[in-house]
Structures are given as structure tokens and as C-alpha cells.
Amino acid sequence: METRAELRRRIRQQRAALSPAQQTEAAHRLVDVLLPELLRCQVKQLAIYLANDGELNTFPLIQALWQHHIKVALPVLHPFSPGHLLFLQYHPNSPMTANRYGIAEPRLDLTQLVPLHQLDLILTPLVAFDEQGNRLGMGGGFYDRTLASPHAPAAMGIAHECQRVAQLPVESWDIPLARIATPAALYQFTPN
Image 1 (tube, one colour):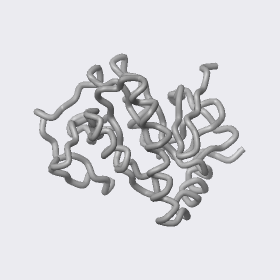
Image 2 (spheres, rainbow, N blue to C red):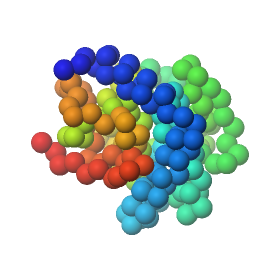
Image 3 (cartoon, rainbow, N blue to C red):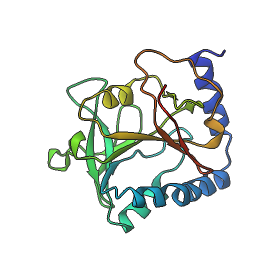
């Protein structure tokens, strides 16, 4: 079995090899797969991320969420608690900044803070996922720490289909996901 670092490198290369046309098509197909499920579950407010490093572009989904009056929050690196995330309300006119990883996030404004318990769902990025719902992230542990909170809502991963592998090496701190959405399918996993 490949190491976590080898898997990250290989899957990130596969993801980066997708053409702009493939990325655009995948982003729109994700809306077709995921939006009906979010509406069926009557999600009112969720956290999502802005794509980086070849991740599946979430902006068409964000626009669809706004059109259906679903509130959207984005992650922000916590300024005082290293390795943790805050979530801030995201609007079309939210002032944005780049964090230390070069990822766009809303400028810190505590009036826009959304506590975890007010979110119905967190849509998480990932590098790879397996057939048991295990998620391999970028290695910083930000989402694992967030999802381990007793106040965290349900989480669902978002990925390209090429990020699916048969089995991931799992660590004790990894939080498996019950659902992962790709442009091709909404995968449901049962806990082991």
C-alpha cells in the first residue's frame, strides 16, 4: 500500500492533470448531483470551501446555494488557535484575503462568525477517499480537528471521481465521512 505522502502526491497530480474544460464540467455536474440532496435534507446553512490546488471548483454550487437562499460559510484559519478553523458567513460581496497558504478566505470579521452548532453541514475538501468513507486531507489536520468537536455538524466530502481509491492508510485521528459527493455520484458509507 502507498504511504499517505505518496498517495497525496499521486492523487494531486491526477487532479491537476484535469483540463479546464473537465474542471468546468465537473463543477456543474456536482451541482446536479448535490443540490437536490441538500434541498431534500432542508439544509439552511452550510460550510463549504473555495477550490485550491486542482480541487473540484465549488463556486457553481455556491451560486446555486445562494439562489435557493441557503446560507454559505467559508473556513478561515483561526488567528489565535493554530491548526483550527473558524467559519465566516460568505456573500457575493464579502471582502476576501489570502491566508498563509495562498487560499482565499473572508477577511476576519467577528460579526460574520458562524458557530459550528449553527451549521447544518460541513462540505469538506479532500485529496483522496476510499470505499469505506475514509478521507485523506492535505495533512494539516484542520478538518479532522474541526470534525472532532462535539459541536460539529455532519460532514460530507467533495471530490473528483479520480480521487477515489480502493483503500487508504488510516490514522487514529482520521474522521471518516458518511457521505462523499463527486460529479458522478453521491456515495453513502456505513460506519465500521
